[in-house]
Length: 263
Image (cartoon, rainbow, N blue to C red):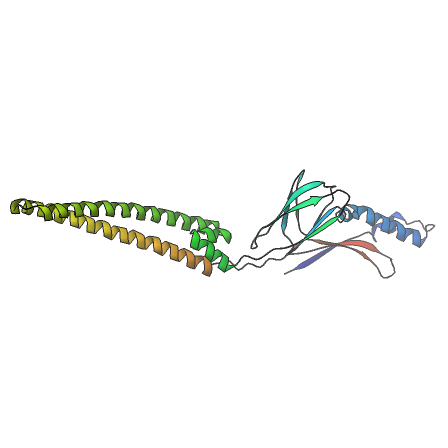
């Protein structure tokens, strides 16, 4: 983790502007402060407005949807005179999304503090237990979510087809077996034996294929649950928003702006 600080000091500019010895020291200092405030006006304006949104954790993306559509990253202030009902949506990677309704009036300041709940393995497990791949999508692992979803869908369709085929062949075998048992002619029964044996083998093969496909489906579903829990991403986030401060010397001999940020 590194910390860089850039000092945009006007202490070096002011002496060149007021090099005339007839101008007093106090006048020089006041002018320097005035210049700093003029340059900092856009930054200071960000702290005024009728809606201020903070969050835990900071660095959360905020979307406002109403008469206007606005966006920001917490901590943020919407300086526009917003009026009417707005939908506020907050989202951040690794956390549950948040949504609420706000009634704003242009002249009444409103401060909203949002606390986002972190995503957990347990919640991912429950989602994947219902729909394979849902827990991975919930955790932000979309590629794995698509894989498990398609794998479960494919194996599920194969299992359904195999189950239907097994039922048809089983019914065919049972019908032939009933005819064989009702037949009184020994000669006809002998002729039917080969057909019944073939139908029995086909029913047995269909049952085996059905069991295999069901086992594959169960394996995909189980591994999907294991993946959602074991490979759940442990992400920790930190805000890297730049910080701006106004610095003066101990005797007001220099005035400057500091811009600091981490990376």
